[in-house]
Image (cartoon, rainbow, N blue to C red; front, top):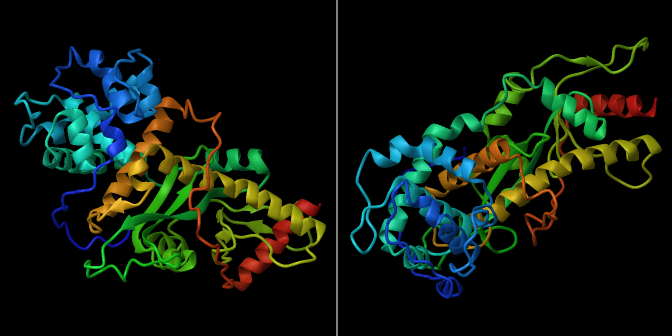
Amino acid sequence: MGPIRNNKKRKVEKKADENNNNNSAVVSGSSSEDFAELWDVFSMTLAGVSSSLRASDEFGSGFRMSRTCFDYISELVKDHMMAKTHFAFSNGKLMSLNDQVALALTRLGSGNSLISIGGSFGAHHSTVSQITWRFIEAVEEHGLRHLQWPHSTSEIKRRFEAAAGLPNCCGAIDTTHITMLLTSSDQESETWLDRKQSHSMILQAVVGPDMRFLNVVAGWPGKMDDASVLRSSDFFKQCQNGKKLNGPKIRLSEGAEEEEELGEYLVGDSGFPLLPWLMTPFRGDGLSEGEAAFNGRVVETHAVAKRALSRLKRVWRMIQGEMWRPDKHKLPRFILACCILHNILIEIDGGDGFDDEEEPEHDPGYKHLVCDAFDKAALVLRDKLCMHFSR
């Protein structure tokens, strides 16, 4: 994760989503037994569909997850969320665990304001805020095992090589901007002003072949370029020191005059530096046939990171659009929780319901920057890898 300075209280959002008010579904309290009856109500609230449409399979279309996945998440956060203050709806009825999880998922999944969601659920906006933050804490505390560097990378490398032919590749790295709507009165507004003249925070992610996040870094201002965010991360230091991407090297060819070994590495686009553990495409005109072929493999492999970030924003819409005056010190933890939930959905539901959908651009409007930094040893390794494909 990136820099988290402190945990200031989140300011109440005053900007409501008027469109959602037309399709609100007020919930008056539910127990574990009757939550199944409210399943579609929560789903329709998130999807923006009239609550009169009731069907048991509609939950997946709203929350983008199965009931099995919802139950798993509820069990994951149960101890943390039920150990402290009990929450109630505006009518005084206590909220069950399922009610609280559904409310928090709606907040993260819809991106609507606290007031709008509170109106839909029949709860005060401060209750929405408190429940969502407690849910974030619970997911972070109990779900982090779903987002960690793998103990073995053999299966990841096998799948990447099968997909695009790159041997010993352990992941694809990319970044995206999480945009914010800050006012001129915000003393830190200039700090977060990026090159598109928007306020944003950077998310850097390393992605596996199944679109699961293997490592994420969040918290740096959107004005930073990809290379600067990478170099500022603990992940960079661990790779440089051989604590990550330190698995077995492979021989690129048998019987070569010079020993041609290739260690584990990631692939990135031209916004990242070329390093022994980070392969980027060849640049310039007049590329050889082998260089063009290598670039094609890199681009195809790197696309998994773009799809993952696009899906992350599409499912967890709170981090997709401009957030109204978010607490910038808590925001990295919101982003981390969404990334963990992203992985849980893939692990339990296998990405059902997404494969047939075209992923939109995850960072529209941001001009691609090029990094000229390179490591001389990485130049040699990339040339050898290119020659390997030429053979």
